[in-house]
Image: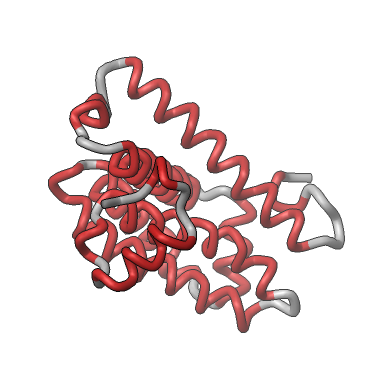
Length: 182
């Protein structure tokens, strides 16, 4: 029994439990790195929304890095999934790409390039999972949640990347007044 199959017969719950474990590990690692002096640039950001975006970027980057490390060291459930996809030859390469992309995302100077790579990488993961399983949506949940965090980090951290009408719409109808990006 592993975390990837903790709820026998319920793929959606198992996939969600696995990504939650990665998120918790990323939060713990991020807190540890913060304690040792990394990510203190968050305090220099001018608004709460930019800080929130930076924190989400760090979470997504560390989650990608941990997922990539799982592939590099060869976690059995990940090996099994890649074997099922018929892409075992891409296993270590995908892990290295995830680690590299996560590193690009967590550093402010390379964030935008990492964001583009991360969105492409996670989009590919979603596209791979959907047709492969009988319950493909369940296994697309972890990748989809990383995608949502990446897009949210982009919206909050770099709102200028979005069209002005979209930013106004979100600020007026969705975000509480305290978190407006303007």
